[in-house]
Picture 1 (cartoon, each protein chain N blue to C red):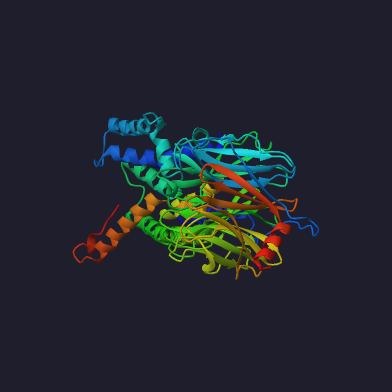
Picture 2: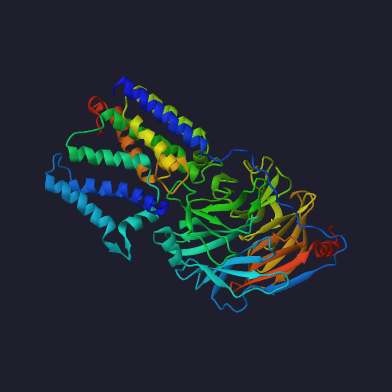
Length: 204
Length: 379
């Protein structure tokens, strides 16, 4: 299988998972026919229905050719949880995922887009960033946080070359994950600060 | 999670981390290897002008870039079509053998070809560069527009091993964290001692700023920043030694002066950009090292338009500049995007966009430059 096809297939996993999750709806226990329909219909929309001569998956690749491995795995986890009917991630695992994504996005995007003379995106071609992330993943794994397992996968993806990008940043975070993580982290912080909801702040 | 599983995962994590780091290209400090044009003391002044694409007949052609392969053939690429950022824009190549004439331009990249190669829709094509390797390989770096206009630009690479007749499937280069927007090429790549290249690039999205792309023989090595913000872009890197260089840049500030920045660590870090005395109407410039700390620049000698294309010289590494000669001057006309390129025969080539309709080339040697300096009274 050539690299281009691998990159194309990989890049389609995240939008396919996200669309399937949307089609599953809010019902925590959808029936089997709905599950099958969601999976097939999302694949149909992405890979079969043409739009201006291209599949929706190809148009999405114009926007983001490198969905992060972290986001892809989180979406697959969420989808698998919905299909299996029981969560694979606990509250603390999701919280770690949101905080990591928000922190990475805050460091990366403003400076990467030219806010300062320092460009943290270049760290993704250096050993420093993998070492820092490996240290963070080790801490999470020590504590039994399952997001540590998710953070292991960008390393594997980088070694395999599953993404078009050669920059380690792209395996960790993308604008969609960063934006979602910032929003959810803000809600988490607000709920923690709010005296009415601090005891029951849960975002799964 | 059982303790044994945690321990196993941590071991796997660090093994993968080690493998990933081991596969990274060497982080050795880059060293510039660009030699100034060879100077023949007794050579008589030479000054020639010619059109590169006189009969192409396109409404718009722009951004010429030159490269010379070891067989002596000079290659020029540019883009052309109905207008900038339009879907019909193609990238063209013309070649010239020693003593010969420029060949008829051939299209080497179209929007449709880029779409096929990259496996995604492309809105249009833009700036292109050529890099000639010692083995005769030509690497084409070119802009595809993913969405919108220049702010939606992305860089791609394709290689020819037969002198530009056929090209490999184009590869997409991911160089920016935010939807890979927006990276462009424009100025001459600088060779490095280890066989790699320092390619001046720039971002033109929320900000406009200058960056460098470091290419090893295997592909992208890394990127570094010359300046941030919304200030100076389209850098032209001019090495003054193996470790030192200046970056001459197009000005997007109100100063309307050619901007300059220095490095003394092979381009990994740069001083704050500062204006030179040379005007800049928010237009492309091109610099070239002449040896002994002398730098030649081709620029538009006006703070408001591109109606004058001139040469200026610095004899002290870019601190002070003296105008040598006005090459072209015509009110209301545009002589844009100069591209200085040294060739091994001691000549200096200057390609530029003539009134948006033609690419032209001026060839001269250092004797001619010395004559101009003597005439202007500024050696």
